[in-house]
Image (cartoon, rainbow, N blue to C red; front, side, top):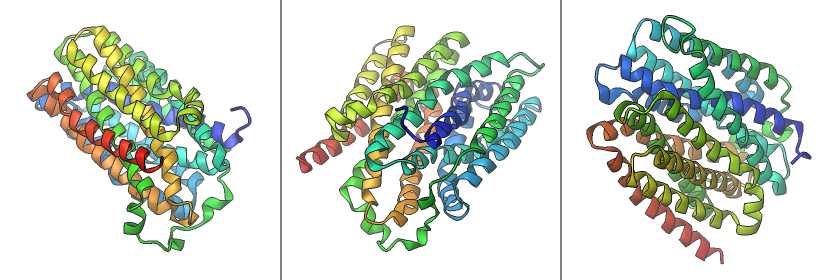
Length: 390
């Protein structure tokens, strides 16, 4: 892994800082929402709006990159995020729930830009190094697992209003990200434009590789987001677990999302992408069974760890399979990446929006059971793809 270009390591460091925002918001936004929201069932709305904002921002973000290049958009997003963090602070101090939700929605733009780090890494290396580059960049998530939750608790009581200090520290991370990104040098081939694509979108999306790649990433994000968004509410608000216990479960989950990236390249080498994704679906099934069995702390912990492992295998598998759907024409990559991320985060937004409503109006168990049909569908798609390529 040490032979990877400097760009990959810069992207890894920046991803750890950018992703701290996502971990931070999942951890605190539902708790802040429960104190500001007019209805308890709206507590997870700030978490959901950041996902909705991501879905809305994906296509514009990629389009801007096709015009101005990745580096300028990456740098601009750092400044954009700092301004939105200030808006979050203002909304919390003034106890404005809907302004906080609006700021969260706009922060979805930051997450949309962050999702392009993995494609920037792929563009920085040769085809045979793509799984390794993707895995290394995603390792930045390991650092974010600690950064996002630790700054939330570290700065919680700095000021009279809870979590204001946490947001201040978060803004400092994006100042560091701006400095790091200054040294990023985008690949020359990235300067090609989307307008050079000759195939229609329908023709591209009919490919088996596209269908499997998108369905795997979408299933991974939807199931992970739906259960993860509901977890702090179920643990802290409904079951009465402390903030410390809730933090430890979320940290373990995020570590499990990214730690396997150390070994993913080897897993791909020996199992292949499809079998690795099948293993991810199996991890999801086991996660649901464990969580359904008990509300004990250990059940939450193991369930969320397996949830993270399942996401990693499906997401990395889908990310590395996707480029094969546009290898015939490099200029198609912006179009393909746009529709992929729009579908992934569009469906994730629906999952995040409904998670709070499900857990408050039904139960934690209903949240878990409701993902089973999607997992069965993804299992069928992967078995079909495996049979087709054997």
